Image (cartoon, rainbow, N blue to C red; front, top):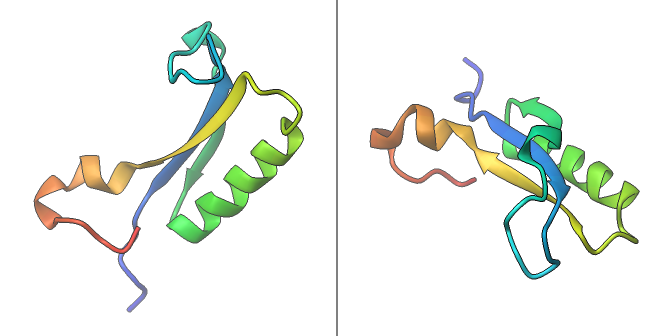
Length: 78
């Protein structure tokens, strides 16, 4: 049987300030995608951040969706 599916969301956008986590316009967030595990999400995150490396106001995040879907399961590796 395959490993348990641990969904991860990768998204990002322009921040108000480089030292902030508040987005300029949340309606314009770039949703990179939802991935079946952390490793795939990390690859997508690296790709997105690589494209915006010269823009200090743009930041991408990985969200552990599986923790929201099943909070009683506790903390997993990623």
